[in-house]
Image (cartoon, rainbow, N blue to C red):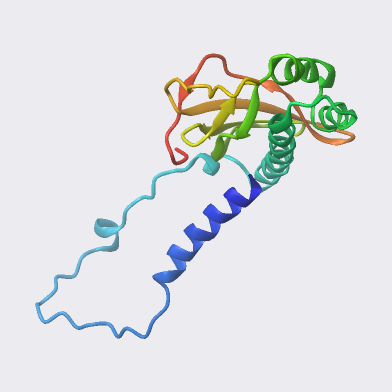
Length: 196
């Protein structure tokens, strides 16, 4: 998952930098120009979600988000096999405030339920909605377009729309680092391919 986020960032950066290079000489415009005041031509950029947070808050968000992405990778790896290993409980203890409950849900779905997450949904983006000293709440968009979930008998689970789903999660800072406190929104909500 981190690779997906890193690759998307690298592609965006490459596209931005592509416009910065070259030996192009500016071309003179033969038509006469009118002098305009700077205020008449200046545009105000659209505010983005991160504009409302301080640099310190954004660092907390990034730390909490990165910890959640670690959890997501470990969770999807475990869901590929659905096995109840000693490492499964340790994984939930490392990343969750309610490890026994999360492990129980996992066992119901994957171990006893027989589901296998062959290809996990892709995390398209994340954005913070609330940041305090001890908690970070953020949304992430999961894209199920290429996800593949099978049952123990090999049947493929069909995904119902929307294929891009908005999920809210709250992370809490503990003495052991950031841990998942729980999900904050209910119901299935659609999200766009790019962050708002």
